[in-house]
Amino acid sequence: MRAALLLEDGTYFAGRAFGARGQRCGEVVFNTSLSGYQEILTDPSYHEQIVTMTYPLIGNYGTNPEDGESRKLFAAGFVVKENCPYPSNWRNGGTLADYLQQRGVVGIEGIDTRRLVRHIRTQGALRGIISSTETDTQKLAEKLREYPGLVGRDIVKDVTVDRPYEWNQGVIDVSQPAGAHRTGIPPARHKIVAFDFGIKHNILRLLVSHGCQVTVVPAQTTAAQVLARKPDGVFLSNGPGDPAAVTCAIDTVKILLGQVPIFGICLGHQILGLALGGRTYKLKFGHRGANHPVKNLDTGRIEITSQNHGFCVDLDSLADKDVQLTHMNLNDNTLEGLRCDRLQAFSVQYHPEASPGPHDSQYLFQNFIRLMDTRAA
Image (cartoon, rainbow, N blue to C red; front, side, top):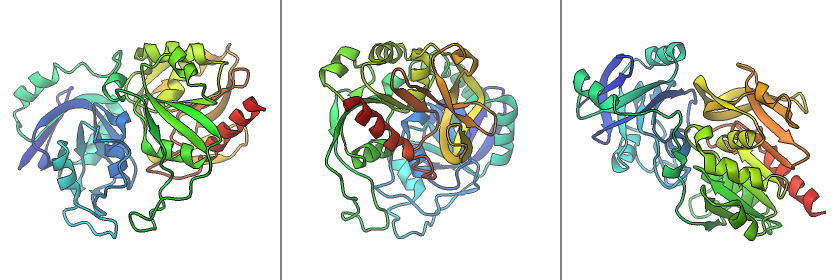
């Protein structure tokens, strides 16, 4: 079955369809991870994005019920050089093609992904349309012209939960059989309110495994509603789209600053930066992958990090603010972390919870615990 990918500048790719039948518009981006495709597909930060994997063979270890990072697939489409139809792994529960088909996500294989990625790196992230039902460029272009893109739009409202809920599961030991793989959970020492801007499950698992009682709340939750829960700390999650458009969250964080310790990741980092008086801007093609080098300016150590973001906090906009810069991206010298000691708030642009990716930065969760311990003392 034929499939097509058309970019807004007219660049056209013809390939083979796998997964669901249909068509979707989104921003076309690329991820350099060698594995972790199931976690990537279920990361809500990829809402309205068509994800291209740079590694040529995807799907070789299949899918399973445990590796999802949210309640569903959020990626608008999936682009690979070659989809593996016969996966082999002791945890495998089904093929990638079936996984996409059952969850309504269109995939395309057999295109020159190297050409596509080079084009994005040169031109920047572009709007695109992926289709397994239509290959006519004129009809696809007409549909794509209706898609507004990400800048200036609040799409967090599309991925956040409708009502608060409690999370009580700890991290998973994947070396153990299903049903006997949960690690021990310590007694809860701190109450956390976690904003769901598109939160990943492994963030919640790590908070619980560090001794937190976690309540997840919708993105539009007010500061008064948060403080009424008497939390020891507030967590600002990852999420999709333009952070400057999520004005309700920015206004809420401004009120919460100084009243309770705050830890932010990814979009949460950007929202914290905006609440502290900074600005954000769109990167040319973003950072997405599991091998990005970041320098910890406090320790001088280099961390290999998992990243997924298309916007960034402007370094210069924080120059006259009471903010310490804590982490820098060694590929392009963009800001990766900040801290405000006076207000007991800190954040990082990358993903210390990984899933997928290395575990170099999980110490940040312990830093959050120490911050709350200090506040309680």
